[in-house]
Amino acid sequence: MAQIKVNDVTFSYEGSFDDVLTNVNFSIDTDWKLGLIGRNGKGKTTLLKLLMGKYECNKGSISSSTRFDYFPYEISEDDLDKTADELAYKWKSEAESWQIMIQLNQIGMDAECLYRPLKTLSFGERTRVMLAVLFAVEGEFLLIDEPTNHLDTAAREAVKKYLSKKKGFILVSHDRDLLDAVCDHVLVLNRNTIEVQAGNFSTWWENKEKADAFAKSENEKHIKEINKLKASAERAERWADKNEATKIGFDPVKEHDRFMDTRAYIGAKTKKMQSRVKNFEGRIDREIDEKEGLLKDIEREINLKVMPLKHHKDVLVLAKDLTLRYTDAEKPLFENLRFEIRQGERVVLKGENGCGKSSIIKAILGKATYEENIPGYENLIVNGTLDVASGLKISYINQDTSFLTGSLKDYCKAHDFDESLFLGMLNRLDFNAVQFSKNMEDFSEGQKKKVLIASSLITPAHLYIWDEPLNYIDVFSRMQIEKLILSFKPTMLIVEHDVRFQEKVATEIIICKTANLC
Image (cartoon, rainbow, N blue to C red; front, side):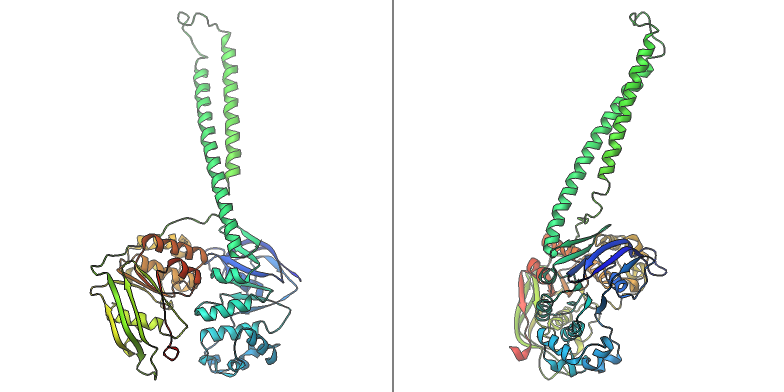
């Protein structure tokens, strides 16, 4: 076992307005199973690249005697025609085929996948092959960046089971179920501090909630004490000023018992009162010092809002014996599927990748004459019954973020959004003014997803259709979105593989199976 020490590291990208990481300090052991947690844009991936030596620190240093390797491996267009066995030498030259095969067996894959062109492998298969290569050689500390994005439930389970038996890695993930299953320590990039703690995500979150509640309680106590001391100081100051004013001049008729020598007594009394004011001010300063920083890592409890519309029909979508097939495909995606979406329901489509979940969404959007172009709909053959309520307004989040380019201002103009309302929604999703001035192509993937979510939330609709909305979205925002959905109860059709999210928000889960499995 060795240690990795990060000493006072600060890093910013060339031409950037702000630091990604500022004065970061922590130490970790190389046999830990470490979960890396933080908001989108907090620098998680940047930290991994710094550990790999891809970037140089602007200030500070990183010391370690261990070797690092990083997931995911880079794949070029030319690489897609090569087999994983051919690419393994490029990814990890010291890994032998037999070592990779052992790992493939542990992750539940046939060795045959090594000898197929990469383009023929699904996202889940590519992920598992890369992880097998990653873990093929011992003696390295592995940096694993969001391995379950775009994976279906079965592939996620396979990755979770595999990683739970490994050690010596940092895992960046927003999947609470995965973090709980595989991690024994967490490294948390808080709002203003860094902390390392033993346990998994749920252990850390429970401790954080207790710490936050204590900090809020202490903050309230200090505020009350400060207000009380300020009131006492103001009262004593008024008394001192009033008393001081009596030193000069007096009416000998009305104040027959007062003499000139009482002036010294009044001055002494005033000085004593002023001393009390100074004492109060000192106590106020001490209370303010103790209050300082109490709330620095508190996650802002800013509630999101959505404006669902009420439709005159109760059933918005009805599918009976639904079969979908593409014109160039020999077999249908699935056959004889039945489901309905009623107002107020939140229906989750669940199934392996390629079973037709996104195609169901395309079919509904096509039937509803959705205003925007739906790629692939023109090649989709719909058999059976698919009824969509007339006049249905739909707010849709696509998986794709590649079209997000240019400024937020131009994006608002193109979509006829109220700019202040849109930026306000992004602010609630933890965007700050620095992000508002950037072009969207410079956003992290999580920030791009938040642009799509904000777009959907400010669009009044009868039905909200979200296709894998949470890929790359940080865990704090996921919980924020869960709270929104449970509070406003919009009618929704969702494709999302996050098990915790499904458990929280779904009123019904529809299982999609490919035709050959039906």
